[in-house]
Amino acid sequence: MSIEKKWWKEEVIYQIYPRSFNDSNGDGIGDIQGIIQKLDYVKNLGVDIIWLSPIYKSPNDDNGYDISDYRSIHPEFGTMQDFDELLDGIHKRGMRLLMDVVFNHSSDEHAWFEEAKKSIDNPYRDYYIWKKGKDGDPPNNWRSFFGGSAWDYEPNTDEYYLHLFTKKQPDLNWENPKVRKEIYSIVKFWLDKGIDGFRMDVIPLISKRLDFADTSLESFNDVVAQVYSNGPRVHEYINEMYEEVLQHYDIMTVGEGPGITTQTGLDYVGHDRRELNMIFHLDHMFLGHGPRGKFDPIPYGWTDIKRLFSEWHEAMGDSGWISIFMDNHDFPRMVSRFGDDGTYRIESAKLLAMMVLTLRGTACIYQGSELGMSNVKFDSIEDYRDVETHNYFKEFTETGTSPDEFLKLVHEHGRDNVRTPMQWNKSKHAGFTNGEPWINVNPNYLDINAEDVLADKDSVFYFYRELLAFRKKEKTLIYGDWKIIESQSSDLFIYERFDSNCNILVMLNHSDHTHTHDVILEGYDLCLTNMTNDDVATLLPWECRLYKK
Image 1 (cartoon, one colour):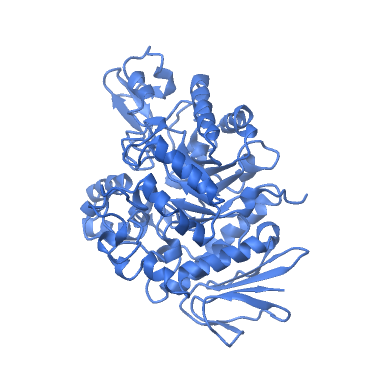
Image 2: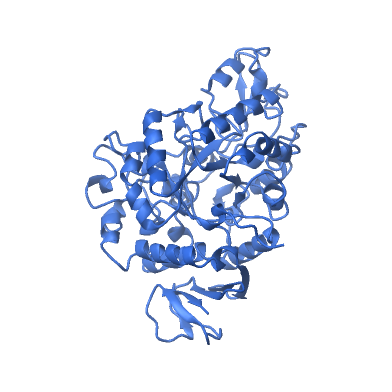
């Protein structure tokens, strides 16, 4: 079987986190008009699809991933008229819009939940998942992604409701056909407005294991994969959504995949499954997470990353499709986590760009990566805004971790690392706002900002642009096969993309040491590199090269 050709396989995604992108009205919060002002900047980069993190009405307990009205724009971002102007501006520039949506849970301020908590016989009661407690304790020992119990007590009805995330994010009950009908209606509402697809947050969690049994698993990642994800009816539900709505539009659907493994991936995206187009698997993102999650780190290395990319390539074969990314709104800046954000920040940012844009899958770039933006190290926990960070700070410090020790973990693993404002120029607050930003700007904006980067033809931005142009021209990078040439070295990642048209060789040295290699380069032409090196038999620290023959 040959790979089916689709536009969503060939195009590249650029993720915008609206709250942190560009503020047009001085209230310190990025907004839709701010995005409109920067559409030419995004187009200039050379990407094709804008993925917009949630802009729906929300109390913002989890920065918009707690939706209180799926059909309304949050006033802090603008109006539906602003949204229509944004969509039109994106389409006029030959780009597409991917909306982020959460159907596993709503906000507790959604009208459905406001009704559901009133009484056990309320018509909306069964829109959510309610259970009696056990001997004064929650119904089971399930833990929330953000720490603490996954159950919260509602005294009015003497029952607990399930929330796999914060207490203000009650899980929807997909067993109820009325809930599914409501969700499909919401999907149709946005597709009829002309958007080009959805990124569906934590979609493998929507079907619950209805025995709600205690888990004996110690690793939270194992709990996610074996208890919360891939429930008994998840494929029935996604297929039903496809049959009812999705199949009637020329769109892309991307499922965020916590708990989806190489063994279960094709169940979601196999070409004959009639479910989703692709998934964001999180295996490489969860590397280094210990039994208690990201703030309980364990060692890992590049050999683990290469192994995972190889396993996923084999698992998908010619039937399935994934997205390739190294950071997003939930994970630290890739140049800080996987590169070197000190001496070799620019070189390693370019190397990571080459990797993301040359592996098989739909590439996704997070805002600021094209500038080489890095993690932030705020001095106080009070400078952080993320509910996850604050919940775990409380939990860890109560169990013996010192505040300073936990703050060091936040500097490496916290989600606010990628949520600090976009760094546009050297002016106050990096040109993001003329008010007080909702979260402080990374102090390094004086050295890392779009104005300086755009003035430097050797910058990370222009390297991305060259790579994007090359990828657009060479379909081998989209549909071609993949072979690892060097996988054993902990520092080198050398692989080939090939088909009947050409061979493309990618050489990456993800270390601060010079390495020799024994790859025969006869017949290859060097197309792109991040540094000058006359010795073709060596790779300098963080050097990357792209050859073609």
